Length: 381
Ligand SMILES: CC(C)(COP(=O)(O)OP(=O)(O)OC[C@H]1O[C@@H](n2cnc3c(N)ncnc32)[C@H](O)[C@@H]1OP(=O)(O)O)[C@@H](O)C(=O)NCCC(=O)NCCS
Image (tube, rainbow, N blue to C red):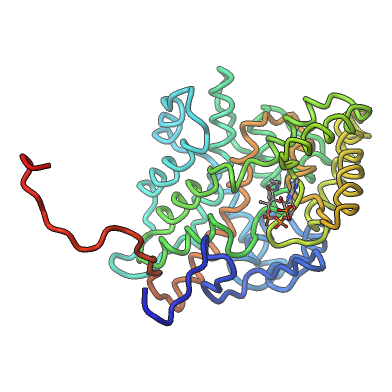
């Protein structure tokens, strides 16, 4: 470390690069992809169109979207060797470990890079972005002892995922909600997994290796996975009348309440607001208000206690998403893989952006080890 360098643990507050892809206004709870507010994308766009926006920087015309959608959908099916790999993956391992390996493995099946250069055709093939969802669905099917379901090209990305998972076409509203959940998770600035993808890309590595590394970063419990733990809490609480006792207990033991608070948002996460609406819609449709009632009461009570303490804290995207996925019939073990399915398009956008004006990431560290010392012969140690 040089005399002028400063040390920031976890790189907190360090600006590590320039990007045009995502803007987060944490104070006001606003999120934009390429300048478009997330609420508008959630309402009007699709995962395929949002992927185009992230990768090309502009919304497509109708012809461009039709061609791009056709290309994405044509890449959905998995080849036999990839299906064999999923089938033979140890049953006890987490699907995130499979995803990390399979993305690197997928690269063997496409001509994707020009040797010794930063150029590739991944924006055209979209192979890894599209196939992650097929891999997740196939893993779940095999896990349940069922057969692989061939993808359909007439369904949106989200609806096709549910179809491949269930073997039955989802209702229109379920497909729309799943697809919009992917839009909401597609991008979020320089978080740990995206930064990992950019670091690997900065070495001149392939998109596949960069995305595989990002999946490894997302697997860690400090990044993905809070929605799974929110649902554990909901199950433990059981009914809205028991929320107060739960909070008394957890806060007395200084436990964090999952799905609450955010490093950047100091207002309600705009994605949580959209997810809450989906939970209301699904609860009505399925005549099942258990999760909605518990979560609403948990939010109300927790926020009022925190406000009293002068620590305003708000729900993040994970607070309502687990309940939405559960009402779509998705098991909790797939929550983080679904996050990866969506974020793959943001990762690819960042990898391509990194390459445009690349500089190898190489920070310094603050040395706190031994001073110079000399090698002793083994018999004297
Ligand atoms: C996301 C998270 C790590 C952000 O942490 P952070 O940046 O340290 O949060 P802040 O600095 O704003 O925290 C301010 C205070 O609120 C408390 N706090 C933050 N989140 C809390 C939570 N979920 N439950 C209870 N207290 C919380 C902190 O302990 C801190 O208290 P203190 O001032 O007495 O030390 C944290 O909110 C958290 O662990 N949330 C739960 C996990 C989660 O939902 N993760 C998904 C994130 S998308």
